[in-house]
Image (cartoon, rainbow, N blue to C red; front, side, top):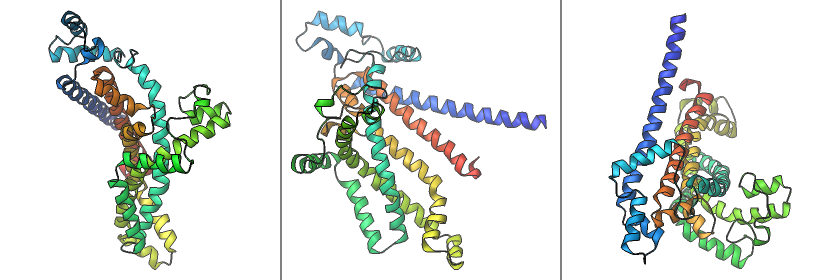
Length: 345
């Protein structure tokens, strides 16, 4: 008995160690690839510091101070050493520590992406189920047109058209930015997410302004998630609806609604967890176009500005955050798999 128990815990510990090692190697490989690509890009971070009019002696002094005169492997080693101490370096764009900049801009993207994924799930799941339940009929074709529209339409074009129609013409949307200028800086920052912070402060006028500003970009950003989630839901549902247990349920006289939602949809929930998790991760790191169009001061805009400036400290910090997000979401999906599907334990 004790031997079997020890073997069980040894297996679990070994699996955990292997998973931790795989995660560590994935993040290390991601960092290495980004670091070396950044060093060969035709952007000069020294010029971003000293300016184009600096003399050669000043340029050489800053070049050496930034450690760019050392071999690439040595530079990468020093970066990993600092990273292990929690030092992401300072950003050229702001002069502040990168970790502080990310902590400042990331809540805005979390707020935007979370609302977008809520739209994606609320609209995408029923659309996919409806399409599968009406395979080959008009409803299925209409759902597939919506999916195609979500995949193929450039998101920056949708953003500009949305501002033109719903802000400039109709006045329904709040326009660019996160909140009206009258409330900017007036809401005490607790989480960095304006909807939550204004609700905590019971400032409902600021809450209404923040909601008015976020709805349009979140809907447009969530459109791609609607397309992806509905397409995957339709595919999973079609596979389930062709199974023998569905035919058996229909023979027993169960209603169509009960068969679709109570049996088929219930059996794809575990698969949909991964789909939603990956869609959410994509929204967090891929919101840059929407953030640019709507002047949304978030993570994507910060990453793009840093990349154009050649600020590799900021870029590396952002890449590491993105890597942690996707690894964390995959680990969360695996854990939820084991909760909802005992066969995977």
